[in-house]
Length: 362
Image (cartoon, rainbow, N blue to C red):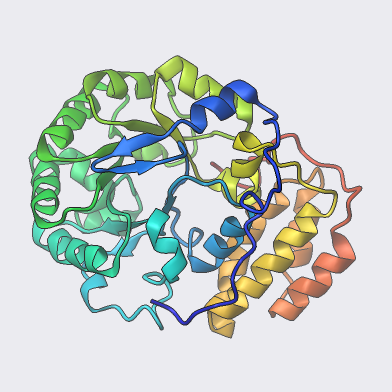
């Protein structure tokens, strides 16, 4: 656990009276409680795990806007977690107030690694543990972790079985279509994962070699949902409320996990489910809050590195985002970030309806 911090004002929680949702049908679906294992979650719109992005600083900002059902950490190395010190770790760190809705994602290659790490995660009080079977980074594949486990379904099943026996908290699995467009192996694996004891599957319908270079095949989520009885959440290219509604309607999935769009606009959870309307200064407010959170969480070198990972997603909101990206790329400190935000982010800046995917791939 980290040192106590100044309490955050949660916008959604601070509303004096209920606000009619902007998207009534979507809000009703996403606000229906769902049982995961022996726990119940009041919201079906979740933050996806994102390496280098869903860190403790970003989660502080996300918490300010509120209305996110579950939040997933960035990918944590299962080998490192048992000995990590949360006070100095840049990845395996959190605040006490996060734990009731925080799931720790683990990446590893053997059942033994996952079991020891999962036990630590449970002791620390996390809501659940998420097993990464989706990362297709070269180093991860070489170590037989992430999406490499999709090539070894029996080993993948053994990992889930071992973790299920070791902990009582909910066990999630994040996985993707596999290594070809044939959905058959993913369907077969989903059944194995359920039999092994997984409580919830989060499915990203892209093949591993594509990473994010091609659109996801959204209909593949339907095949996974129809194959199992446990909850299935869809993930991939959800950038608008209509995208979210379409994913729910066409696949029958139980909820939606949003990744990089949430980095671009972290208030979307409150906007899509709770009637929150951002004011004209929302983008400047966001970047100023993030700068402060980065200062609280990371040393000077790490905080600027984390900011540079973030800024392409932020800049993608704007019609002239490439120019804004170049401007903020000159920042060397959080004071620079604040100065540039006050000088260059204005309420009248033309926006893209959804972020420019030439600046980033969702």
